[in-house]
Length: 268
Image 1 (cartoon, rainbow, N blue to C red):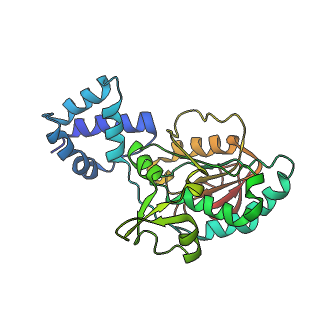
Image 2: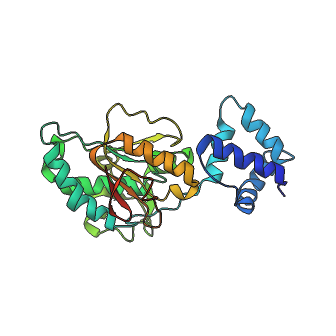
């Protein structure tokens, strides 16, 4: 069982490096790490953390992050956002960027890929025959290398795709041998660029984004971290650009420069 001081060490490490607040989650931290630590031959949580901090390859740090970040997502989650994106945001961008035909869309909590692939499907639907003339690639980042590997493989079960409209399933997925799994087709996969990224790091964008999806990730941050992140997102958006957050998440209306369009949709 994890000792209090060991737990505080791990919680502090995650807070300082990744902004993730685990201070009320001792049981979860213990449960997710205990078996891995035993299997790895470390006698205590402190021994493991010593290995994390001295590992020049950063492999143990990646394992720590993979274990302690929850990645629960699914296709069509909070679908009202994609409706709004297709009916309001994309017509605005189609007009605004008619000369450059360059869209800059970032999914900042890509998890196992369902969300960025959904965004790419909506873009394909909206642009139709015009899509080849536009740069509609979606940047998809996550802190966890483990889920990004899943996302890049793009393999999902029949159950995971059950909410997807049939025409999307036929158009964008290939059924694999055995018939219970599907893989994202190359046409769609090429539209999403997956990268590992820590939201606490400075944003590396050379040009400002038109739309940022940052859904269901701020639940891990305390109020101050959240405020700082929202400000960074605001600064990274083009004037008129949109931010989508999870429908159960909130942003303090008094501390944000964003205009509130709906409770989980904001505009610069």
